[in-house]
Image 1 (spheres, rainbow, N blue to C red):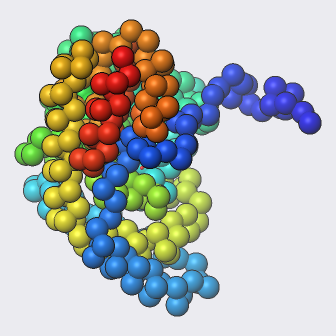
Image 2: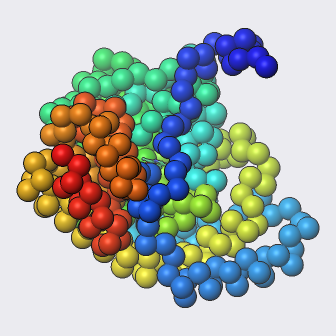
Length: 362
Ligand code: PMP
């Protein structure tokens, strides 16, 4: 047996850690921001029927352009963000938004190129940067993990990146990013601005998405995922809204037929039920806000969150608390941010189980 260090892997992969959220079978898993409500029974029935229909053509390669799915996604976003006026030519999808991001960096990153990100943020942004030989430059956030228009302009001037990465709302802090900040970034760079909106549906009702900024901004890219609001993490569907020329660039790097026929059928069926799925998002937001409201009585405080999770602080030994919760079969996330842990808002029962275990953990 040889070790990884003995293999001739590319230099920029040496010393790198793979994505590392533990996968454990526990009673209450609130560690990777899934939608633990799952898919309602009537939606599941429709998905199963669509997959069954797709099986009759399973010996054929799927629609390489996933046209129906792109039309469904455009319809969904146009309903949410009136005025975006998106057409299917501006939509793209892949196996999770992770793959979308990988395709973006395969097309626009690479040796000699850089992205500017603002840690603490989603770990896969820098991991995919390493995997594509793209330099990852670290920008500074303001107090309370925010990014103002002034900050982003200053950091772009300082680092001159090829792509600006904004995570809105940000994982793991839940921090919102104002449209003014995204516009300021766009105006301050000649490069691309990529906005990761994995949690957009959990923003306060009426908060505009970066999708509304797309008209006239051909260097703006906005990704979304069905993993969170649509409870589709296991199906792997992420998507991008951008200028058709950007989508053309992604066609150069995607593997042919990358999105399976079953995935396409399932996603189209789920999107028909967006109203029902968004009603569940409201329930998750209630549990999120309940966590933030109840933490102070336990001696902790949660940051305001526009996502389906809460980063909370005031922990003397976060890892010890994480372990005590795990001992009670409640799995949350220790991201190594001093004094903090992150918990996903679950069902009412799961959230109660978490809060009760946390009360006992001190
Ligand atoms: N972006 C952010 C900010 C995330 O938190 C996640 C998943 N946790 C993703 C993208 C990737 O999600 P998926 O690949 O399931 O679409």
